Length: 161
Image (tube, rainbow, N blue to C red):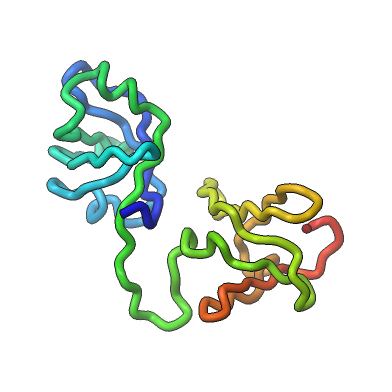
């Protein structure tokens, strides 16, 4: 069930196990609905017991985290959820790009190892022979993604890769 990142566990809120979530999904109402399950980095499955939006901050309670101490032990962990099928053509989850071959001018230059959520846009972490590179996932720098071939083309720009 570790398909897409939906958030990160933030600081505890109160003593009864409520926690602030750093949301990285555009559907928090769906992803954090009561009864939904998420998975942490270490594989623990958490069930949403209560959820509320307090002035733009999502506060959740998980059935498996009974108090502030339990929440604090999970602080900073990524929350993953199951991806669902997207029926629109040429649409995909950014996290599905992990493992794609990166091409520049049609030649392989690396592999996507991770997709990081940043405030302005996602960043592609690309492993190249020269080391790790971060490339903003924007059309100007990544003009083409071929899901069927599992490749993406980056701009032929000095210093990008």
